[in-house]
Image 1 (cartoon, helix red, strand yellow):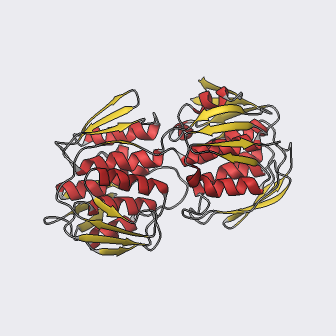
Image 2 (image 1 turned 90 degrees about the vertical axis):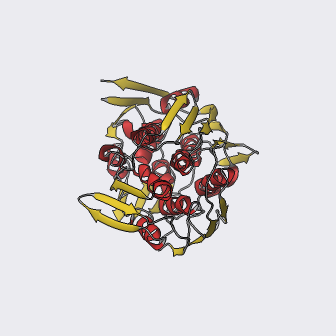
Image 3 (image 1 turned 180 degrees about the vertical axis):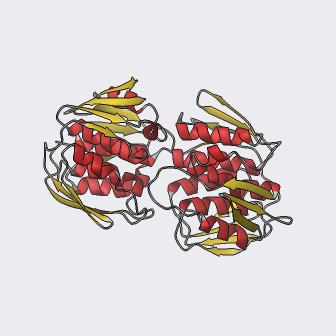
Length: 419
């Protein structure tokens, strides 16, 4: 078992470089299935989820190789369209190969996806989109089978909820469809814009990403290209909150400030000093800050992936905060772990009331219940009195590259222990 051991009451100071976005690179890897030519992806983060996606691609015969941070993908000869159950169940993003495989080969069989246990994330919107484009869909025994007679057909598709995964999956499939596909009530996340930029480099005709209406004109084939994904706004936000909570002075390097607006606004509301530059953000905090209320929403609202980290900071704020989770119904599992550290939190439905008290947190043995919960516990540990041990670190490794090394370079006392 692997755990992180953190000595508390540490002020972060220095410079941290942000990695490329996990939520951008995973759909981009899936999108390479749309071409028979080689693609090169640069500055690819060494994450567990990236490793899983590589295994998924390898399982269907894709030649995929990694040399340091360069990923070369040659999907010229796809040898299968049924990736193994154990890989798809391991990570939800692996389901993103369904759209590209269906468009390229006309048939796919895939198990229901897995991932962090943060609530129901139904894939019905994906399937409704494929069905509208002419695919026949059948479900049974934990598997989904889809096939087409000829090419998919461009259609107008309205999403009942602006799902990121459904937007990406349908958008990718539509690139090789016959005719024009319009996705209404589409998700607007920066990672979707980055995926569209990658697809357009390949020769696709995607317009409107970053808005709630996306228009895709299908083409007959796509070409191989090189691409570097955008910086990870959630990793950047995690370090911004960590700097604020610890009373630190940290320059977050390699970040797109426009992507950070919801987080920056809340930190300023807390009384934290923020300086924005072209590709970096500086966070300066005294360690004394105000409570704030937060409601998670689809982009450009406050990201659900930053809810747990902000809650960890609010435990040490002055005053009472309320955090309302509207995206996932089961994303408060970190609350019990924060309570182990002395936090005063009450849950009412989808809202959590945090009674903030400076110096209230104490070191304890806790576990990461999911990816972002793990980051939240790390932030809480920096503010706590004494030593904290975080188990189930594999959740954290899914989305953060060498997190203990990055925190250590900022002055934190974080150690990875193998038992």
